[in-house]
Amino acid sequence: MKLNQRSLAFHATCDAPADNAGFQYKKGGRHAAHHRRWPVPRGNMLFCFGDAAGREPVGVIILEGCTVELVEAAEEFTFAVRFAGARAHTYVLEAESQAAMEGWVKALSRASFDYLRLVVRELGHQLAAARAGDPLPPRRPHALPPKEDGCALWSAEIPAPAAAPPPPAGAAPRPLPGPEPPPLPPCRRASAPSGPLHSASFAQLHEWYGQEVGALRGQWLRSQAQP
Amino acid sequence: MRYNEKELQALSRQPAEMAAELGMRGPKKGSVVKRRLVKLVVNFLFYFRTDEAEPVGALLLEHCRVTQEEPSGFSISFLEDPERKYHFECCSEEQCQEWMAALRRASYEFMRRSLIFYRNEIQKMTGKDPLEQFGISEEARFQLSGLKA
Image (cartoon, rainbow over all chains, first blue to last red; front, side, top):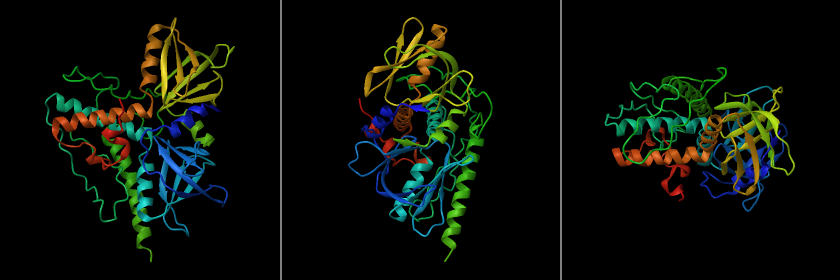
């Protein structure tokens, strides 16, 4: 498939803020070889430079549709970026510390465009509600585990809004006083349902993300329980 | 640069924000207009030969400019090489405007800036940071300082 590689390289090295740059070993999925890479996440992509001074990445992992998992490995602080589908690649990465690993897992779990769109939509609704003078729907304080005690690796959970129905697809926000906010991200016009994000209600989406996070947390707790 | 082509192909099969058959002309001098099925999925624009399941190619839609081209078409160019334009021909002015609006909003960068805008506005109105509930208020990519004029 053709891809605008020059634009991709430009995107990798432009000066938009990047989270979590840092040295990390990367093992190839099929080969046992260790490659030391300087990975730089940017948007829904993880660019891999050969070194910190690299001007162009040697490769990129497009992060849509992936899951981030902990792995059992001889090396510590190992996790994997896994894709669905037959013969799909799994990227095994090794961080330099527990804190670094937690940071990476958090960042990569939330890197997808879909996740960002979900958050933006939710904020758009909150802003519309606040401007219309309605009290913000009370947030059920889901027991988001505190960040300090080491039990919370990430919190991709999105609390469900109480009682606020999602707007119909394509509905335009009412004209509001104040600066015009950017338009809400368009709802997908899907040809066929596929995947949990297709025309699900917010509560359903929360449930889906919550299950995924719950499963990952369970996995981590089990791994911690082993001697 | 290497990239995970299989996953990009899988992405091209996901539900699209917009999909239509358009005339498309590549940036090379002397290229001709071809009919392509053009599909917008997240921040990628895929284009297919009309009878094929795998895309001919994809355009990452970051740092791009969408410009109207008469009569009812538009072009996409990229910041690092503004003279290199991908041309698209629509069947109506309405379709053209629809595509241009969608493509201008399609980048991750646009989404990120929208988030920062909403966050800031909500914070001003309510005194609360709406990102705290998601546990993402410290992320560098969501800071106001990350916005440039």
